[in-house]
Length: 345
Image (cartoon, rainbow, N blue to C red; front, side, top):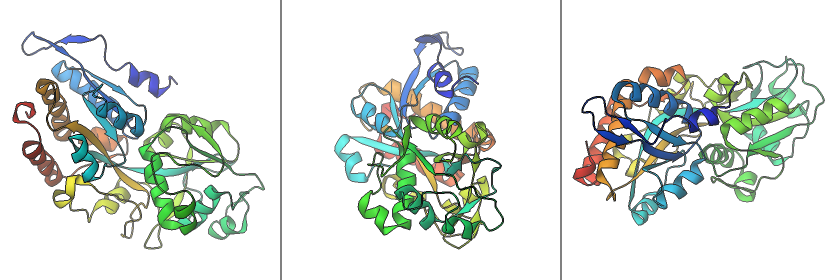
């Protein structure tokens, strides 16, 4: 299989394309950042270009890189799974809005273990990542999996090596599950991991887990499915062994009042709800309120407006959760309220 990163980096052919509607030449829009939503951005870009002739060049370099590039004004938009706090946005002259919601899932490489055959809770997962649980047949894991034949195999932790919003979602969850993790490691796009090996991007972690016997890693669910890696159930806040389905992610976000959330700053880990997936998160787009080139930003907002209206099923096909109509309405209102009028479609 051709690596997804290479395909994503080649989304746009050429530096300019003919606009089918008017015959004018328009430069491709550019973005960089989170690998978490890269698969759906690829699908949306392909469909949007076929419909409008406008291309997207998206670089899946991790949320940290996306934040850095938009602040450096080298791309038309940045993308991050870690929402920026309102104060940071205001200081940088940025605004943000969510695009889709997804699940970060622990994945394993153990002989004979298939997707959904194992279960962990947050405390045990944190202790594995801390290195306090070193073998797969540890009593704590066996207690949660009494019918699973667990080998006496060393656990090889695989984590992100780059600045990553998936990192933030995962470590934010671990911080809520373990005071020790919270104080010793914390939650951020980049942390000092207690042990393990690193992989770049969701794709890199997925490949590293596939190549490493006894591995445990974490990726956005679409990458687990695409790479046929065994994901595990997680005990959620309500004590239920949840699976990372679209319905479970919807349950995690069901109580979110996006319209009244300051700058759409929302964290979705460890939400209550019978079926809620506990390691859920939204992914966000970062743009300038007062852009240097309003026409470029208008093209960006046209792209995401089209995605909201036409890309819901494509998102679901890749196990992402599209935003409800009321949230999309609030997002478009925020564009009019916060962004220069010349840049708003």
